[in-house]
Amino acid sequence: VVQTWHGTPLKRIGADLLGTPKANLAYIASLPQRSRQYSLFITPNAFTTPIMTEAFRLRCEVLEAGYPRNDVFHAPDRAERAGAVREKLGIPADKKVVLYAPTWRDDQRYGGRRFKLDNRIDVEAARRELGEDHVLLYRKHHKVLDSIPGAGQGFVHDVTYYPDIADLYLIADVLITDYSSVLFDFAHSGRPMLFFTYDLEHYRDTLR
Image 1: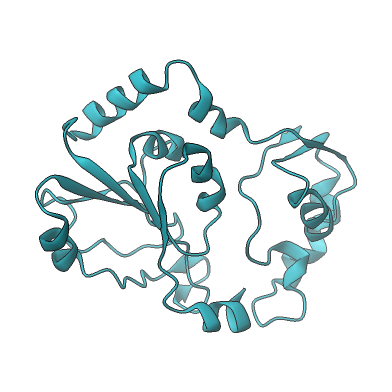
Image 2: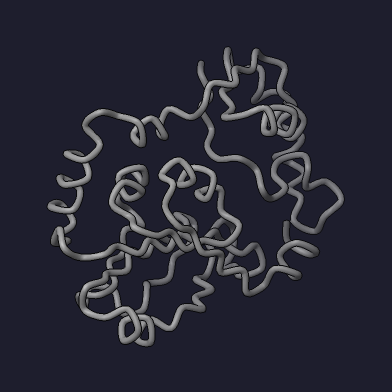
């Protein structure tokens, strides 16, 4: 079994959450058993390897090889693939694409693993400021249930359930995110990123 995981851990995960209010003790206790299922665990870089090893109590071989999904940034057919993605989403070639991909907030919860959308984007103001030559692709974390304001009205596209986020990276002219590991993936593109960290102190000191 090869565990490809995803992302470079900017926030605390797994056993690193011990001692915080968000630690899932049952899950953390299960990590050694989970680790024994893996033959190989892939990490993207030397920074990530020791964090993943400790956070997931890894006992298997760890390979620093980059993430397979980021190969699209260097694929020879990436331009053709980007064109096909635009066509599938109905986005004309002359439109600039802003991809907004925030993570979830542990304290914005309906119950269980179902979370609320903590939306701080003024969609209407964004539409006015960016103009008709832009579209906003809004990708919620898959744990977030609420609908996205303004989605389906031309400017905002809900791409939460688009099957491969790497396709969205290819067509994005700029990424807006917060503490999500998508920032490390998108860095391969060399394109601009904006960090909308409106709750930095709370997230860093209380949540993750």
